[in-house]
Each structure stands twice: as C-alpha cells, then as structure tokens.
Amino acid sequence: MGTTYVLPSFLLVAFLSCCCRTSHAEIFTSISHMTGLLYTEKELVQSLRDYISAEESKLATVKSWANKLDTLTRMTTLDPEGYLGHPVNAYKLMKRLNTEWSELESLVLQNPSDGFISNMSTHRQYFPQPEDETGAAKALMRLQDTYQLDSEAFSRGKLPGVHASPLLSVDDCFDMGKTAYNEADYYHAVLWMQQALKQLDSGEDATVSKADILDYLSYSVYQMGDLPRAVELTRRLVAIDSGHERAGGNLRYYEKLLHKQLSEANRQQQQQQEEQEASEEHIQLGTYSRPKDHLPERETYEALCRGQGLKMNEARRSRLFCRYQDGKRNPRLLLRPFREEDEWDSPHIVRYLDVLSETEVEKIKELAKPRLARATVRDPKTGVLTTANYRVSKSAWLEGEDDAVVARVNQRIQDITGLTVDTAELLQVANYGVGGQYEPHFDFSRRPYDSHLQVDGNRLATFLNYKDEPDAFKRLGTGNRVATFLNYMTDVEAGGATVFPDLGAAIWPRKGTAIFWYNLFRSGEGDYRTRHAACPVLVGSKWVSNKWLHERGQEFRRPCGLTEVD
Image (cartoon, rainbow, N blue to C red):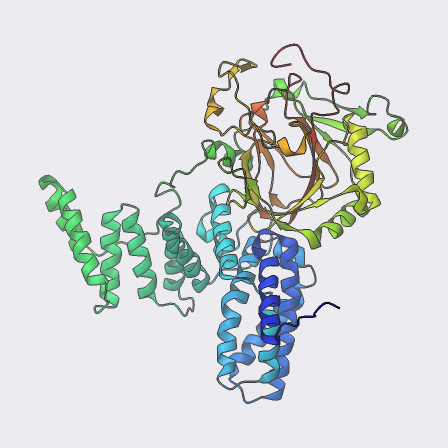
C-alpha cells in the first residue's frame, strides 16, 4: 500500500489560506464576486453584536459602529447587485473590509473576545486585499475621467441615473487622493485632496488633519507644475503647523524656483500678490491637463461613452431598417423569426431582439459565477495571457455540454447568423465590476497588410502602430475570428456602452438583445474599422456573453470575395 502523508495543521491552514487568497484575488473586477462579501460583512456584524452582548462594558465606539453597520448590511443584502452597481458603494465596501474592520479588530484586541476574533480570523481569508481597495479607487477615477465628473459629483452623490446616492466623507476623499498620490498620479491626487479640504473647511468631521491634506495637496500641485499655487498652499500649511518637518523646506524651495521663473518686469507685481492673503479658490476640473496615456483615440473613445461625437446623421439613419430574420429560411426560425435592427450601415452592425429569455440569462449567470476569473489579454511580445488595466472584468467559459441552455444558445447563434459554431470558441460570459471596461481593441488577429488599403475612401495607415498578432489563434487551428456575436444580459443604468471610435458609433446595452458584426472582409482581410471598446460601467452591473466565430467551416456559408475589401 502507498504511504499516506498528512500535512501538519498549521501547514494545512496556510495552504488553504493561500488557495483562498489566490481564488479570490482582484475581487473588485466583478460585481458577482463582490456580492458574497456583503453576506460575509453581515455575518461579521452579527458576530460583533454577540460580542457586545457578552461584554456590554466595551467602548461605546464599538457599539456605535455595530449599529451603523447593522443598518447598512440589512439594506445592502436586500439587493446586493443593485447596491454594488453604484461605484461609490463598491469602493466603500472595499475600504471597510480592507481597512476599517481591521482597525475595529485592533480595538477589540485591547480586551480580546474569543468569539469575535475567531469569526474575524475565519472570514479574513476572503476579505479584499489592499490592491482591491486601490483598484476600486482607481476605478472611480477612471469613471471621473470618462464621464467628466468632478470629485464633488462623486462625493455628493450627483451621478447620472441615480436618485439617492451614498456620500464620500472627508476621510474617503483623502484616501482616494492618497491612492492617486502613491501611484504618482498627481492629477487625481489634486482633485481628491482639494475635495477633502473643501469638505473639511465646510465643517465636516474627519479623523485626518487639515495639515495632512495640505501636505499632500501642495506637493501634488507642485508636481503638476503650478508653482504659485504650491507656494500658496504651503504657506497655509506653515500657518497651521509652523513646525511641520517638510513644509518650511518645501516653501523655501518653491519660492526659490518661482523667483527664477519670474522676469524682472513682473517681480514687483508678484511681490504685491505675495503680500495679499492666499486665495482659497477651488481648482475646477480641467484646470490642469490630464496626462496623456497609451491610447491614441482616448478623447474620441470617452466622448462616445458619454454619448457625444456620434457620426450617425439623419441621412445615414434613413438607410437603417428593421426586419424579421429567419436565417435564410432556417426551419427553426420560420415560425419564430428574430427581429433584426440595423445599428450601423458600414460596416454592417445589427441588433437582434429577444435573443435570450430571462430564464436563460439567469441560468447562464448561475453557471458562470463559480468560474469567474479576471479577464486576460494576450501580450503581443510574449504571446502569454496576462491581466491588464485596460480590461477590467471577470469572465468564464461555458461549453455546450455544461447545460442544455448553453447548447441551445449556441444553436440559436448558428441559426441567426448562418455561420457554423463548430469551429467557434466557447461561450464567454463576462461580468464588469467597479468601473469595469475593455478599452479599444480588435477581436481579430492582425496580420501584415498593405498600408495603402482603403475602405470607403479612408486610409487605414493610422492603425500601423498597433501590434500584429499573426499567430494569436494558431493553436486553435480554426483560422481568424470572422465575426462577433455579443449578448447583453443586463440593462445598465449608466455607462457601459459598446463603442466603435473609428466609426463614431455607440451601442447601449439592452437586456435580452444581441449585436453582431463581421471582423473580416470576405477576402479574409481584417476590417480595421471594427476596433471597439466596452465603456466603463458608471452605475449598474453589466453582464454579457459573446461567441467568437472563426473562419474554418464558413467556406460555403460565407464564400470568399474577389477583392481585398469584399
């Protein structure tokens, strides 16, 4: 007989803890995975109340905390996805479980209660990690940028499509600013630190001091190149705390730099300004330039997400129609054809109505939830799948054999499109978390092509900068992705559109509908106009499922064209 090895108990606990941490990493990227935290938090509150009952003499601070969280969790667990659909709620949940519950634990440990500490230890392995709190904070900043919302809009709950909204405290705003500061993102550090300062100056209670806020804010403003403002804020800091370890040195340094920048002609004017009381005017969104990043069409993409910059004029709209689609007289669709609506003329993008029933949507979500993992992208340099900041969601892959519903959906896609699904990829299900998005990308594998190739008179040389991936699907042996079929499984209260920056097209989610387009011309050449994106979800929980159909097997279903752009 073989030898049986038993792990020591402490190693077993460490192993299980490690596994749990791995499987629950990056919680903020999926609303579905965050809902369980609300029930965990509710159980912790109940445990805390038991502790208070057993030791009534505990500090009043602990009891006040329990009362506040008890009320909150009763409300949050009534509709977990609805609650977490608001980005501020999601961020504050990450912050509570990552930071504030630990602070409470430390308070309780001053006079330990075995029951409560044991319960905390049991659940701690499922708690969000510091990177989850950071990720949620950065997601709020991404929403702030994309939808042109200033910090006060978030702090005061003034979001589109929301009647009642949670508020951000002075400490919340400070932590947002500190997250940006630690990432050397001084642009957002300024926006959030000044919001914290504004709320503190208005009389709101906070644990953070005004000196701490001014310390971060003045240096961030300096990093943004605004020396006069940096001097002004540092003077306010020195006035509050003359013994601050950095403020005096910083002020002398800033003033020296500012003096060098000023010409002799305006030094007198500057001296007069210095003698005046420092201005406390609030820096507005847009005062400083947002740093450029890797995305060439950033402004166009984000404008479309906001519903701006659309290029569908009335003349083009008049060429769009709706019709019944029977899959070229497919027997399964003769008695129940699908309603088809044109969303765009060239390239042709269509929407199908009532593709998924409510029961099918819930079943697909049920199958996908335990399999959800952070969505990955293929590194063009190494070919290895990896996570990326420009794709924030969790996804799962479902086979037809998993359930009759999946098999039925696969067959339905084949019937509607007339393309075989035998060579298609598995049904991918995705759930977008706080600020969930997928920045502009191509679904097909890029191959070297003639830079003079033209489509509708527009040169495609713009896209020469994008990496070619000629072997992305080589291991599948099914050719390139010829078409995309995208199912919307939820409505989204705000944000979350599918946009095509090169076209100026935006398509908003409608539960139960699906959109379809070809990624390749009939010649097999990629249609670079189909570069598209999933806009950040501002309010709501976005679920989609998609089927990528490949070239092999379509030879007689979609015959090859005679020219490059057929």
